[in-house]
Image (tube, rainbow, N blue to C red):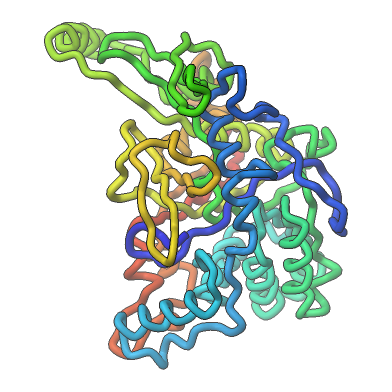
Length: 451
C-alpha cells in the first residue's frame, strides 16, 4: 500500500517456502514450518500465527490476493524534468492510477539510483579478494538485482563482475519469472543470477549446509511484514504473558487469551530485550518503585515482539556466518491506533483511499499489517544471533564484538553512497532525500575482533 507518511511506496515483503532452484513453474507456496499450519479454529493460535495467516495464507491471505499489486515502471522517472514536489506528486498520482496497483517500491520509483547506492555501499565494504556473492531476500520484480548488477558491471573491476553470483530468495513463482526477465534484459547477468524458492527462515531450506565464504544479504522493506508476537501484563509489576487468539463462543468474533511465557522463540526475544532484569542497585530501586506505582495507578502493558525477524536472523547467521547485512525499513509509523510498544499499522485500501483499524484482530485477509522496525532491538538481535551477546553474559565484557553495525537515515545513506543529484527536481526538491524521513538503512558486517 502507499506509505503512511512521506513516502509513496511500501513493498511486498515475502515469506518463503520449500527450497527449489528456478525454474519454479510448478511451485506452490507452503505454510512455513516456523508457523502453525492451522488458522483460528477450534484451538487458539499465537499472535504470530494469526498475523501470518492474515497476510500469507495461500487461500485467504492479504498478499495471496494482492500478489499483482507490486508495480513495475516501464521507464525511470526523469526527476530533473519535474518542477518540484507538486509536480512529482501529480506524476505519482498518474502512474498509480494508470497501473491500478497498490504500491511501487522505493527501488522501483528511484531506479536505477536506489539500487546503485546499495551497490556502491557493497563495493566499498566487500572483500574483493574473494568472489562476490549476494543474496536478496524477497527480490520482488528483480529491479534491485538488475540495478546492482548493472552498477557492478559498469563500475567494479571486471574480475569482480565476472566472478560474482546473485541469489534471489523468493516465494512467488510469478515474481521469480519476472525477476529472470528483468535481470535477463542484460544477457551477461543471467549466468550470474538465480532464483531459489524457499523459506529463508527455515534452516532446513538451506540444505543444512554452512557457507563459510563472505557474502552479502539484502532485505529491502522485508522486516515490516514479518509476523510478530504480542505479550501482555495486567500492570507495571505483573509478569508478562504471551497472547493467543481464539474464537469466542459465538464462533465468529475473536478474542485474546493470555498464558504464562512458554514459547521458546518469545522467551528468547524477551531475553534479548531484557524486559525483566534489574542488574544493579538502581535497577532494583526502580523495580520497587514501579511495584508501588502499579498498586496506586495500575495500567496494562502490551509489547510487540519481532519474533519473525529473530527467527530469520538466527537461520541466516547459522547458514551464512560471515554474511554482511544491509536492510532498509520503516523506523516509525505515525497515527498508529493499535496499543502497545512497536505496534503495527493495520490498513485497508479501497477505491484509492486507506482506512486504518484500531485492532489487529480486524485483519481477516483484506488488510495489510506492517510494523515499525526498532533498530536498537534489531542490533541486539543481530549480536545475539551472531553469538556475541550470549557469550558476553558469561565472559569478560572486554570481548570484542563479532559485528560492526551502523544505522543511517535514508537521506544520509544516499548522500554517502548514492547519486542524489539524479533524483533532484528543478527547484531543488529531492523526494529520495526529503520524503523518506521515517525510513533507515541498517548495515552490519562481521569483524575479526573477537578476542
